[in-house]
Length: 263
Ligand code: LHQ
Image 1 (cartoon, rainbow, N blue to C red):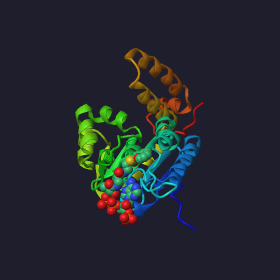
Image 2 (cartoon, rainbow, N blue to C red):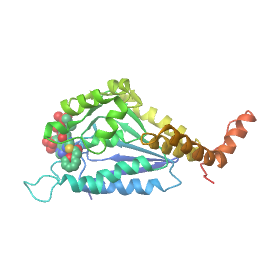
Image 3 (cartoon, helix red, strand yellow):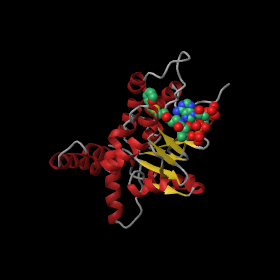
Image 4 (cartoon, rainbow, N blue to C red):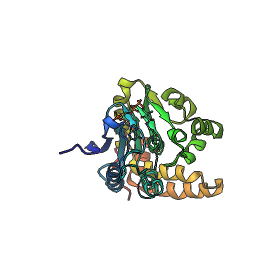
């Protein structure tokens, strides 16, 4: 039997999804995208899993769409279909699920592979990893949210440089530019990500989901609308068991015991 295209392992509240076509640098086939989408859909509503990690097997995170995954030789992938059915739902799902999704970028992240990583909430990258908006090299435009994320994260000039020149960006520079959270030594990637996921899984996870929602809404909101949203979400957070526990524990000078419950 062939290996699954996406490996899934749950431990201590952390679901780890590993893109698993290492010989092809984890390039996304349609089957792999369908598997990833269904794993993410399940994770989004699974209360046993407050944290998700996405990473790649072997020397790459993902080289983007598998350009050879077509029905007949000589065809090229149907871009509109793939975006509509696979990439766009995956990007929206990562952004909307009420829990942190971490990318552990273990090696090159190219094309839609880079932009799936950029859709995640916290991006850790191995120092040897690179981010490549490869699209211009093959006559395409950045997709999977790249043209939305990049100018917001690093500004218009740098976004244009990456997209038009299609040159690789080192993990260190990605960190310095604010594209990712952290570049770490290759041999520390696993332990850094594990420490972060442990911390998140033990945190007030309901509030983390609300924070994520508020931050995501901000780019389309005026300050006044955002203040209203913060008031509404803070009302929910402070009425939640973890909100009450957090404040009570602070006042009693003890460590809070969070449960992640939302009502
Ligand atoms: C691949 C791929 C790949 C197939 C490496 N496909 N086999 C959405 C909707 C619809 C249409 C199109 O696109 C999209 C979104 C996109 O993502 S388009 C952008 C797709 N990605 C790229 O253009 C990047 C293509 N890959 C590369 O440029 C290189 O592989 C990089 C720079 C990532 C790594 O280079 P190397 O380290 O030199 O590795 P390699 O090129 O030797 O790759 C290793 C193997 O992986 C090789 O297979 P082989 O059987 O010869 O060993 C490659 O053919 C295969 N591979 N990327 N996207």
